[in-house]
Image (cartoon, rainbow over all chains, first blue to last red; front, side):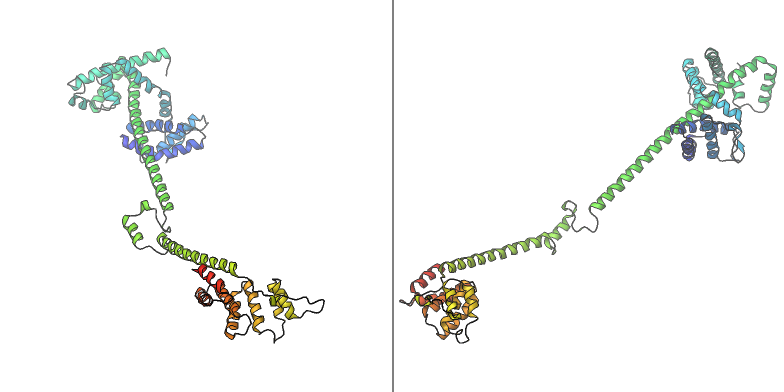
Length: 176
Length: 286
């Protein structure tokens, strides 16, 4: 999903989310936070193929996600995780809770990548944060590696190192 | 580290490669441990990637909204400005400010002013001022004549007109008329004149006194008619005095040429009663 599609969804759903925040008596600034988190959840669903466009439109599904996020924020005792979004398409409870549980880890990843340093952080950034394929990286000479195997092997090494750093951080700070 | 772990966790392994990796995963606990170590990291990295794209989209969206809002504000300002201009110079207004008039329009207005333009008003004002000037001159002349008349005119009196001592007996209207005249009660004299006997009224001497009363009261036209009649009929004992007072009545009523004619006649008649007075008045008139 490219940024133009995300902007379109924000434009179509933003007003609905602002309205539900206003109705819930929450501060208006909460709407943009809900929309941000809702978009991440929706895009994950689209990317892993669990979103069914035949059951509901993306903007309707996004509005449903934002409504659940708002309910959670407001600490309302609603059946959040089993509430159908629309047309029977439900947001799985484990995905929703997983997102909330690991939301803070996004900032941690950025921090750990900084600690990892070059060339490991560049290899990981190009693949997972910038979205370049291995072939693009080789053809455009974005890295010092000339073959796919050497690139993958090197990146696997640094991924394992980064995972170990995250595990150590978890042990040290008892983070989720 | 197994080279296919990353591809397996990213869903990139398919077919035989996927089957072989799953077999190895089932056999090798160390491989399973490595997979479980990397699974949350790759999930977080994918989510971080999505969060970056969403953040980029949010910035773009905010920029577009800002541009859209500025455009709306600009449009509103433009509309307000146009409304203000329309309100200041709406079509019903007669004359636009000179700064907004084209030179052609200004030329047209200058060359063909309408009745309501300042030019017409100026013309009216200038002609009015000329009229006012003439009126003022005329008024000044009239004032001079009135002053001259007032300086010269004295109701005629002689010893024969002075009322004698009548004792306590009844006073006739005729006598009362003369008494009022002598005492300067001209309106009362005129009132009594109306009660005179019919044969007493048309007498030239009586009419001469009445004419003096009228002149003293400023009723020059009536006095002129009476004096012209007396002068024409030669029906009084007052002779040149009638001509003198007729000249004065002309003077009072603004008939200067007639005044001059009579005065010149009197001035050219040495020894007449008003010889000197006529000459003096002529000088004043000149």
